[in-house]
Image 1 (cartoon, rainbow, N blue to C red):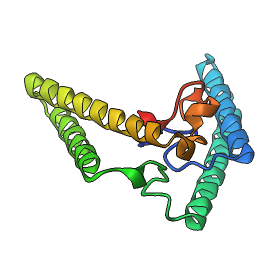
Image 2 (cartoon, helix red, strand yellow):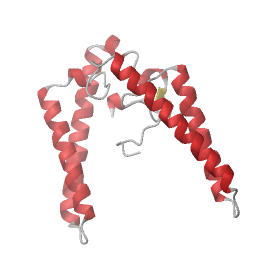
Image 3 (cartoon, rainbow, N blue to C red):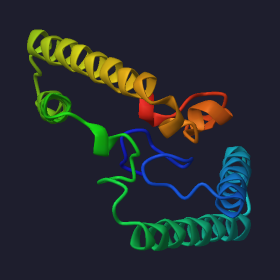
Image 4 (tube, helix red, strand yellow):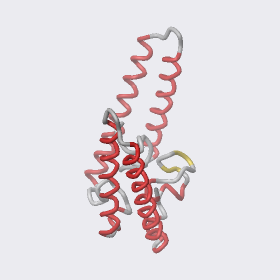
Amino acid sequence: MGRRHGGMGPGNGAVNTPESRAKMTEMRNLHEELRVELRKPSFDNGKVTLLHGKILDLRAQISDMRFKERLANPVNGRRGDVMAADFTPEMRAKASEAAKLRRDLRAEFAKDAPNKIAAQGMHDKVQKLEREISEARFALMLKNPDKYKDCPMFDGDGYRGPGRGCRYFD
């Protein structure tokens, strides 16, 4: 999937409607059914191919829904993040620095002999920056809680699943 959180649920610009949630649930169930089939000592190629095709169809439908929502509401911030529009320049700089450090960390791990001390240092810096960003985001939410009341964090259906919070406050 390639996204930071692997996201199939609401978050990263997902459309959060009953229809989209139903499609995501159906896709999750199909993934589980596919895993169960593939774990069998002898599985039916036709059945697993059909399941995989259904998953791809649902993924395309969800992608279309997200794209149409994005076209209809292009001012929601770069990734549809409610709080991104409220980021201070300092928060944006920290987010940019954390992203660069994550890229550098991936590059370090891609080496034949990664420098473990350098990697640990980058990891520690990323954690520190992400904590500072999270604390600043939470402070924004506390200043104006009504603005963020529709965040999935409060309805218990965040991108990580029921009761697991939302990306606005990571």
